[in-house]
Image (cartoon, rainbow, N blue to C red):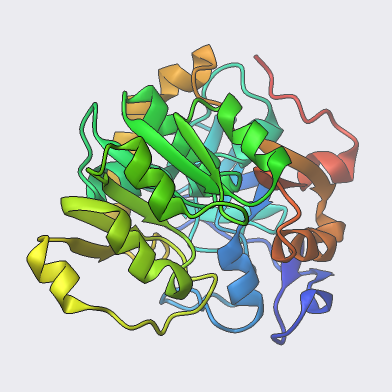
Amino acid sequence: MKAIVLEKFGGPEVLTLRDVDAPKAGPDDIVIQVETTAVNRADLLERQGHYPPPDPKPRYQIPGLECAGIVVEKGDRVTKFSLGDKILALLPGGGYAEYVTCPEDLAWKMPQGLTWVEGGAIPEVFLTAFDALWDKAGLMPGDRVLIHAAAGGVGSAAVQLAVRAGLQVVATTGTAQKVAFVKTLGADLVVNYREQDFVQEVQEWSGGRGVHAVIDFIGKDYLTRNLKAMAAGGTLVVVGTLSGVDAPLDLREILGRRLTVRGTALRSRPRPDKMRLVQDFADRTTTDFVTGKLRPIIDRVLPLDQVSDAHRLLAGNQTMGKLVLAVKAQESGESLEAPH
């Protein structure tokens, strides 16, 4: 099969397409014919050698943390799926390929009516946002949440999930075009962080009460301000560290206002935790994807052999929503529309 294999670490130019052996299903695994996958910031880190795959180490280091595709092989103990099922999957890696193996409990049936492009844009970002809002922050309807990088893949998913759940949403982004876009997702207040102080805007909007949670992708540069934007007893959920990882922390802020700081990452999490998250997410959101109340935001679709360009676009913050990679359908000339 064809796959993007990391034989060395470096810039986008190290991402090259080559022929490798196709994977085989273990007893609890399915083999997926990948129709689409997508590019995430974690992939950029992996390409640079900073985000290794979990043990057991695969024979080939192939990036890609999600996919939409068709079950073409299954292990002896697999009971959830049949051959030919159209599914979405959260992967430990391997998505940048024509075929990938996945434990059956980390996959779920693709919501009816979605295209392959839409399906490939869902697993990693929506599961990350779902986990941050509910499992890590424990938010309830009516709570206030600040979501940074709201025009990105995880950010746009988090805004939609929060609005759908009845939260009050403040979002930040960096251009007028992105501000207008995030407003269409239903955020109550959208702040252009290049022109406005998000702490001041949050405090004015909330009547000085602050937000119950902050979903942050920035890290170092935002830590102090995130804490100042929070209500007493609030939770900061760190999803990414785009500005760096080393930041001073004033413990008086934590102690005096009973704040909580939590981190989250899907790839390194124990499999039972990921299984629970996937099942909960599928149960609670499938109908909303079918009805269009939730929708993956697609910036553009590129063929797998243009993955280097996709990495450059994401690294340059030139996207709104997800960069999707067409794999099997692009190679064969088939439609990217999923059968309805």
